[in-house]
Image (cartoon, rainbow, N blue to C red; front, side):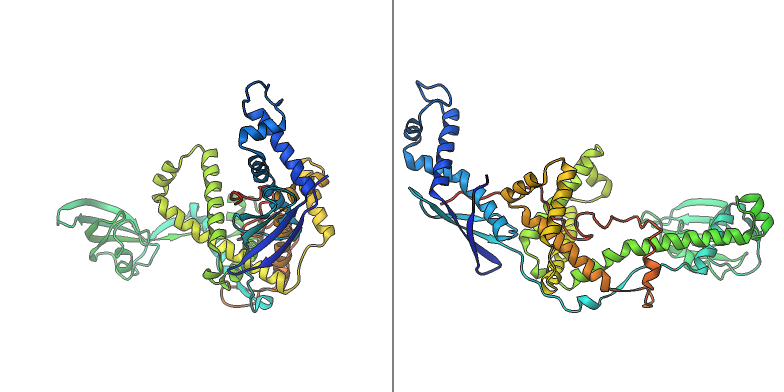
Length: 473
């Protein structure tokens, strides 16, 4: 049977809380006896087999009863601290400072634990957010672009006498000189697609409007960064001509029986893709808007550092699974370790701000999981681990992680509360009909509703211990 924990908490300055914890004398004595048995197995005492030395002999070997009691307290305090965290429903964000206040030599033991907790954040307007996401509506222009790409393999090039426009295929005699004036390119009858950017960065701006028979002198930066000068003698201008979208072409080149059927099919494909894109953006964009309402200064460094470490560890595990080292990763991505840390820190800061924002919403709206729903969460987690719910609850309480599970559930309630009330608009500011976004017949490619955590913020890690503790003084 788990020991009963007597603990009280009081808020002190700088988002810190002092826990006052008491351990009954009989439980202390049981801990001392256990410490004696453990040390008897570990310490070599002449004349006794391992584990067989009497307690008095072990005490003498260590330096007396006080030394054995100190050893027992080093084992007891972290355990009782973790249980006190669960009993008081605190969620510390840093390791505690433990200090024995009574019973160092005999009797019941009292100790204080000073821990840092999250600051309370209060937002305004979170119940009427306007969030921009990609439009879920397919447009005629998008359909035409897709239909053009389908017909492109059958396109022909036709010579034209009009001025050049972007996308035209032009035939030129090209002479290119480097920064020193040395000719390094000499190509006749070179076919160039206006707009593809493979000459110099200024060419695609100056070619439109010119005609066959004219010459362009152009200077600029070539792909790769070199400075180049080109003389381009334009000999021919051709435009791409797509086949007409007739029933005959459709029947000969596709699986459809008519152009109308083909247009309807691709219009629906675009619509499905855009609805999925919009739905994937809903939660992420909403969480970003919430995060923007939390000042960077309100995000405790302890939380940001912990999230940063977690993300870097996740990246390391991913790279190891792919057989890649960090050195190889830096070479491929052209990053330095400092570049990576700075980029990940930005994401970690945003995740912490989302975390604080959701907790602020939950506090202001009095949102919290019911005992029954928390029991269901534990039962689900236990089933996934093939454990008994009661055993898992005891483990969470013993490790001080029950509050993390409760916090995770609370944040999901807050996220759902906000998402039910947010108004989504497209890039033009037009309000998006929610019925378009909430089509239950289509997968959105995102996380299921019961996935742990909330997009953009750190999920609670309920399977970790209560954290390292300092030695009691």
